[in-house]
Length: 195
Image (cartoon, rainbow, N blue to C red):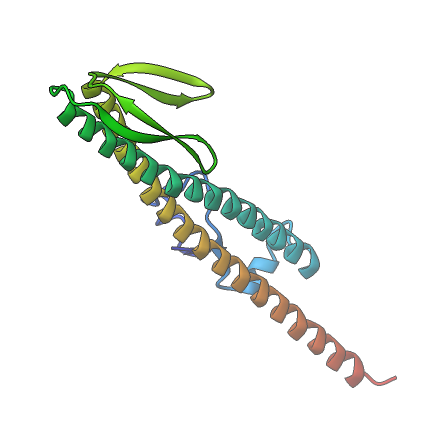
């Protein structure tokens, strides 16, 4: 998933956008990377890489929250669709439907519902609309398909983000090791010089 500095332009045309997540560039040649403008010291580069890493962590937190929301939303939509299908079967009969509906957390009320061809759906933001059962079913099937598609896309984005974590961590380790080697080489040169 990550590109190298040398081959970065070749894959730029065909790389997929992942919700605006910037791609971490793998540092193949640390010496050449450290000679680039803006990479004055290893500490400055490590700070930039750590900042990028923290941004990835923040993005992961947001995507994980969206994923949890979608994972709870999909079963609710499926359950509502199942209820609508049951109501559709019963709408041509004269039998009352015995059901329990939620009043508050863990508080249900028993109700007898006459056959109907209308239902009310919560749309969010304290908005409820009345639909024909067929329209409500079509809307919920569309919402279920959209939520499933969004969940799949979110999974891809989280996988891409994990690759960026790994690339950034490896880059940080490579720059740190480069700096340790440079310092030990400088110390050897200083100790080898005659006083």
